[in-house]
Length: 202
Image 1 (cartoon, rainbow, N blue to C red):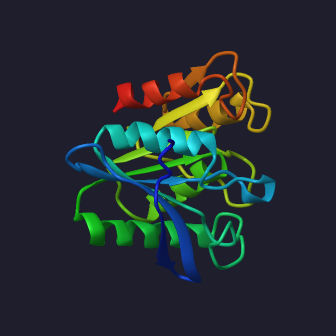
Image 2 (image 1 turned 60 degrees about the horizontal axis):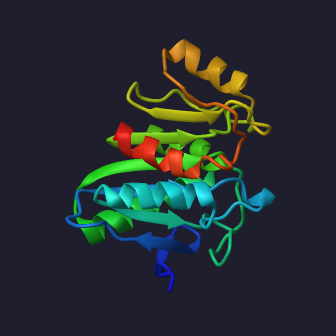
């Protein structure tokens, strides 16, 4: 029987945040907060890329928190196009640190979630940033520059966020981009290799 990970409620700045929690395998060596894709197009914390990332990191010893950000699922508040969501993620980080201690922090996000995670990293320190199919050029606020050790992965045939847009954003930063050939925005058919790539890069 498939084990369903527990769902917890975290107090956010505009109400409770429905959050999937996936415990670390073995000793907990870090915290990971993984942000979901665009909720206006159906993105939630159950997204397969988000869950693949959480499972990969949990196997490396990370306690993983996958929140539904404001206005999504049973989370309170109203979708704020990547602004208020930054405060939501910071609240999840603070909750995680209160539970787990001041461990190594990883921020990750897929699509809209990558945009949010990059903006969170402007506000708080994190040891690692992982951006998958990051939503570059989709919002009024530009996607910020990120640290040199950021992991960026994108589908060669991404039909939502063109690879060229991500390369144009990464190029001035000298930031490497890992390209998954022959796959689109949702990494269909490439989720297992994506999980293995995340673990190799860590």
